[in-house]
Length: 194
Image 1: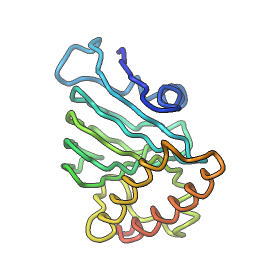
Image 2: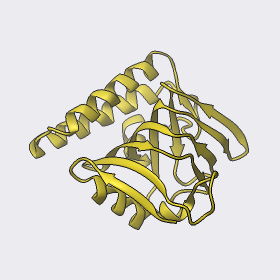
Image 3: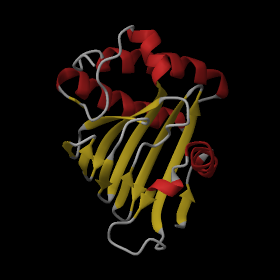
Image 4: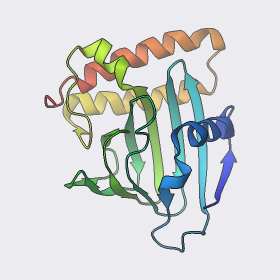
């Protein structure tokens, strides 16, 4: 598989390369609408935020992901805001459908077989150890949709965070990382117990 990437912000290509090198992302992505060797086109902007990564992407083609993302890697979660498009499939046998404006969570060490339609996403990748430190007992994350006031607050925060990342000074990164950890913890605390 080849990936065409347009890096439109500092760290754009670097973050994708780092994720691909350390989390084996590239081998797990395919296009359901084309032969395995077909490239897919994505515009990806990624920003390291201490131990978090904020990623904005625009997919031009459907994208299929099958398998656990990083069983041999530190345990991470992706908190995904679907700005445009939808994701559908199954997570450990349970059906998943989420659409525009919704936030869905993925645990990288658990099984997923999902298809992401062309569209725009904002993602915060967070170590699960960080969430456990903030929350104590970790709620169920994998496949959960963050709804209600917590979901709306988190969506607004993720949009604002993304807008701030392009102009944040390096000295402001620790503040943004701490604030993001607190907001994630508060908004995810309403999810069902694991």
